[in-house]
Image (tube, rainbow, N blue to C red; front, side):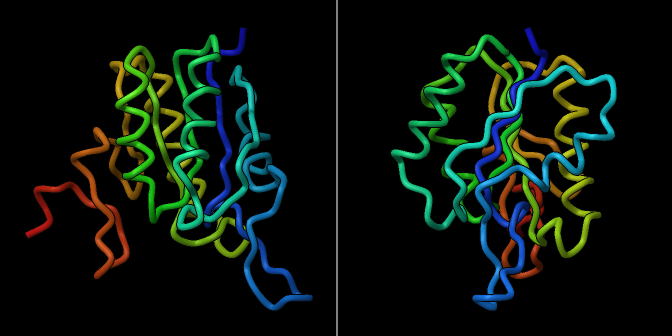
Length: 168
């Protein structure tokens, strides 16, 4: 059995520029994730590509699909690549259904195809957290934080995720 289940749902992390349409799109592939994972030589993981949406388009039926995939998985450590706009909503949804696994949601505010640093940092931080035997629960890993999902928020005024105590 693989140690970690990685669920790639799309989001800005994965977006690429489509020159024919002149816009960023969420592709139906795992190119962004694969480009990072190729450097994790000793990692035992299973990668599942599902949903392929910007998180603003995500529905509760998509969240249910994620929850069912996690529940059926033998892995106890789950890393989810998810768009940043509704990451908190998905985290709360999963917490209400799943209590026997460690789940970390991560993503990026800037697509990996435009700047690799943020996506790599957030992904690696999330993965490192999962490799260190975390307690069961749902966490968010963004911008130097890995915290329980309900203690982190997306500060839209400055464009970063912060601890709730920093919200003042």
